[in-house]
Amino acid sequence: MAIFNSMKSLVVLIALVALGLSGCSSQRINTKSSVMEYLYPTSDDFLVTASTPHLTLPLRVGVAFVPESSDNNSQKNVWTGKSYSGKITEFKKNQILESVSDNFRELEFVSSIEVIPSAYLTPGGSFPNISQIKTMYGIDVIALVSYDQVQFTDEGALSLSYWTIVGAYLVSGEKNDTSTLMDTVVYDIESKSMLFRAPGTSRVLGKSTLVNLSEELRADSIQGFEEAADDMVINLNNQLSSFQERIKENPEQVKISHRDGAGSLGVLSFLILSSLLVLSRIRKYKQGLESLKD
Image 1 (cartoon, one colour):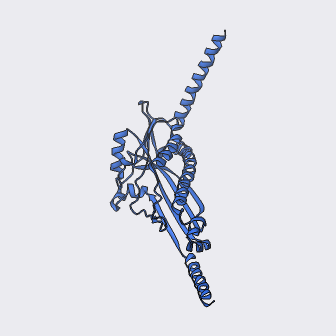
Image 2: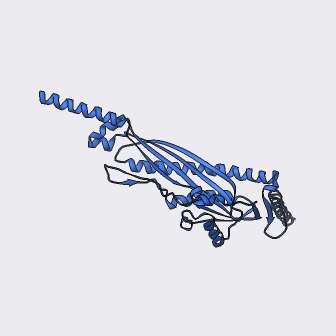
Image 3: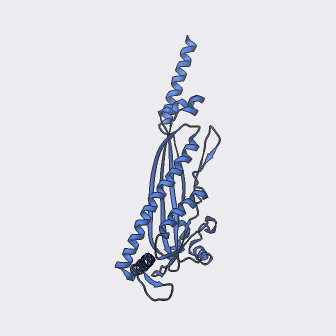
């Protein structure tokens, strides 16, 4: 009986210690890429003077993810030995870049979109790197996409069950919080001027067992990137519309010319002419159909 009471007391003591630890135990994983780190890697780079943008229509646009930061961290699951970093895959990057590109493809004053592979952007490459990409792809404007995702993991009261093997596999004692920011910044390459930016955000709350923590965090990470990207694309569409309005209301902020050498041409005028051309073609098509009926 004494032995039983001693064992019972030991179990209670272990449970109390575990409960105390569960209230303060947490992990933080951060994965990010930064436009500032890419364009302005040193203090001297901030001395770069931007000039008035001169956009030649129709524009040729490139889209790319900036390189990942060097201080990204990871965690190792003590139960499975697996490491997890939350790093976004190249496949997912390409999917997001295609969504961004779709917004530009809908614009009448954009002639082409080029998705730039991540390998062509060097960490801290700044504007000289972008100039190389401009020469390689023949683009005028580049949309740089960056992200910052933070994942917190806290042990809840159910983490007491981790003192048993079954509990570590079956009980969802880990509370996961994934916050994601994704941002598109559009630059005129020649003038080194930022034209506009469009952010997107997401927050994903989840739970997991200790054993499948890495898998759940990875799933939450992907969901966070997807939701933030969707939000960013919506804002990008709004910012493109606002950019057109700003040019119309403040033409002195951006110089506009036509690639065919027709001289200055406002974005609004360009869109109107494009619309008239489409209407003219529709009218001729209808007239052709009526002549066939006759």
